[in-house]
Amino acid sequence: MKLNGDRIKELTLDLVGIRSVVGTSDENNVSERIQEILLTLPYFRENPEHLFYVENKDDPAGRKSLMAMVKGKKDQNRKTVVVIGHIDTVGTSDYGDLEDLATDPVALTEKFNELELPERVREDLESGNYLFGRGVLDMKSGVSILIHLLEEATREPENFSGNLVASFVSDEEGNSRGMLSCVPELVKLKKRYGLDYQIALDTDYTSTRTLMDPNRYLYAGTIGKLMPSFYIVGKETHVGDPFGGLDSNEIAAELTRRINLNVELSDDVMGEVTVPPVTLRLRDLKPEYSVQTNRDSYVYFNFATHGSTPSEVLHKLMHVANDAFLDVIEKLNRQYHAFTQKMNLPHKKLPWVSKVYTYDEVYDAVAEKIPHIKNVLDDYARGLMDKGITDEREVSLHLVKKLHGLWGKKDPMIILYFSPPYYPHMAVNGKNEVEETLIRTLKGFSDETLENPIRFRKFYPYISDLSYFSLPDEASVTDLRRNMPGFGISYTLPLEDIKELSLPVTNIGPYGFDAHQFTERIEVEYSFYRLPDLVLKTVLEMLK
Image 1 (cartoon, rainbow, N blue to C red):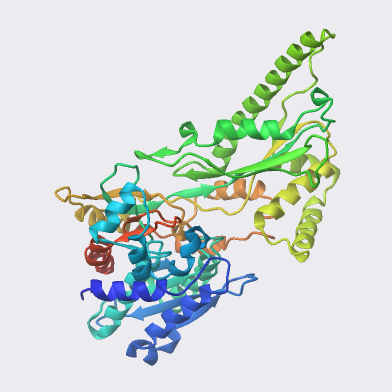
Image 2 (image 1 turned 135 degrees about the vertical axis):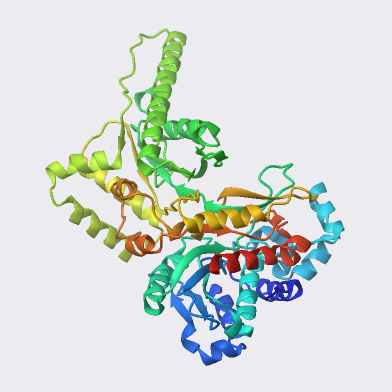
């Protein structure tokens, strides 16, 4: 078996030419095109049950993923490698006047010759070794490698030992509905055909880790993600009497200052460090303009993990929130004192006290008054969804506000909780023979003699669907469920099926720059002509 770089490039241009912006039914156009390509192969025409769609669960856009299975006929080898790739992309509005060319890499790359570009982008363009376009890097090139892998594996199935199961999934750039819908199907295939899953392999993009990083990386394991969220209740007042209240926005701003891009909060495991937390949303909840200060606000963060459990993240951020609250109170007292001095008026210390709670603490307090609180909140969540509120984060926020209202406490406070989605981290550290083989294989590809060295690293650093092949310990999941409003109603995970899979994961992906930017581009030589051989060798080694 050998993979052909020209064929992979041809497939990439084909798929990039099909718009598939996340959250739209256009994603189906790619899954349908992949099915069309695979149905040209005699294997899938002879085995139509090995190629099928998986409808996304509870998806208003009606999107679907495509799954394909190749069973080798050389022997009775039950070993199976699961390969995955996502078919959606982020939007194209960032291309501005060039949006019509965003999905035409050849024309876009040519057009860029006429534009003023940043120096590094200009150098890459003039090298002739890069293609530009939406999805060319993230990740239709990676999907094309997997399609071609299936093409080659089915060319002579009587000479292929082992099995492949491919999932071409939708919605990865959104809420991973595609992967979460495919997980139960993977379990069904495993049981129906007696498959012995070895690893899950993704071909999502790779890039430089820092501005001056020359390396190409192969990863075992994957980063995780939590979304710690803060519902902040202040005390409203008239703007003419600002010290008579406590502006929730001020607390939100201090929280953001302390958490956003704070490397001290990064997760450091086995010498690998996550990116620091990043603010994803910050806003007040006052519905109208008025000269009343804001009573409540909320903010949530992307919090990457390599080893920290939900309870550990809660504990860490409870301290941060308390310190932020105390600092705001101290500042207000200092400013109020200065104001009264300038006005030559009597001064009194402001009444505010730092109060920080986790969601489960508030829930337990309310449950003492309302024993059936679970039913109350579940019904409320369903009612929100019936009204068309489908964003899981919005549902969680409404549930926190509802719970706070039922509690009846009017004092300023912070309630810390988790918003969806949840991506478990997964370390591959050689704890069994399969992990040892995977690590040894990837390390064997390392080459420090190249101008751009190939290196092995642990934890794929970008959020991906690889997270849904394994779960952390049961206690971590319990802590998450207790502090994620709406879990099980507005947001669900196939926990038992993920536990059934429990696979080590790897990412061996194309290389380029600026994913999710209008200068998104792929390095042609490495991605099409060197990397596919590493993917193939890894698959074959794991099937031995």
